[in-house]
Amino acid sequence: MGGALSTEEAQGVTAEKTLADATGEAAAPAEKAPAGAEGDVQKTILTSLSLKNAQDEAQTPAGVVATVIASSGSSPKNATQKGAELKASADKAAVEMASSELVVAEVAARKQELAELAAVEKSGADNEEEISAGQAPAESLPSASDSIAAIVTRECEARTFEVDRRIGRRFEGLFPGRDLKKSPPAHTIVTLAIKTRNRMSAMSTEMLSERAECFELLIGRMQAFRDKLAVAGYWCDFIDPSSGAPFHSDSATTFAETDDRVRTFGFEILELGCCRVTCHKTFGQCMVMTTAFVEATTENIADALKLLETDP
Image (cartoon, rainbow, N blue to C red; front, top):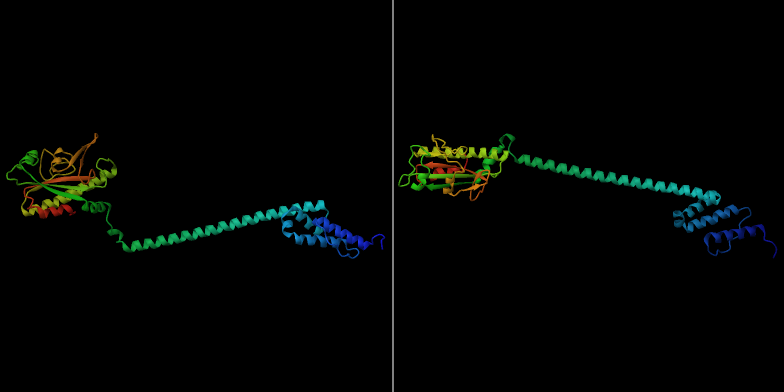
């Protein structure tokens, strides 16, 4: 009874000692294992440890080593090397998985962008169709000059001034053979100013182009005004805005847009050093103007004045 331990008892003690060393805690006595089952007992013990500390062992090299020892029965040195290889493979797989997830996310984002772009394009196409449906045919659309005419039609001012002897003397000789100093006053001066988009002091290709177009508007309106008065039997002539000369009379004198005499009719002349610019009290420097002389009173030309507010 108190003699040497039998083989089975020795194996049981060995199993208990191994379990205590592995866990660091006092283990309960293990049941006696069958003879020749030492390898099976070791595997059973390690498997129990693996189940108990599954999370920690799965994340640490020690866990990998224990798993390798349990599964292959290798020595600790070989198991450590094998565990390192397994961990490296796991890390590589994790990196590949993360890369795959990133690619999937990028593909999903790209698909979303394409879907949004397609929606925007479809919306734009629908808007273009609606706009096209509400527009007139291309051939009936107004030209650039027509657009300018529409703007200045709403932005103009016509004023009348009775020609007394003082004013008449200042314009003596402008219309040869015409006496503007008659008393009582028999002549009326009409000024027409049209607003422009560009300041006439800002020299540019666009300004010169707009200026020329507005000169045509001034001449067209003044011509229609003169024709209506001629039908009624009243003499009328106007100043060519591009030259300052009377449009229908031969004259050696002129009345330019920047002539000091325009101050008589409420305009101002700005001296800018490089040039002189006529300034309107409402339109400022954004304007062109011309003047008509009529042998009639203001009451006689009231109906014809309406023609100066629109294009013929």
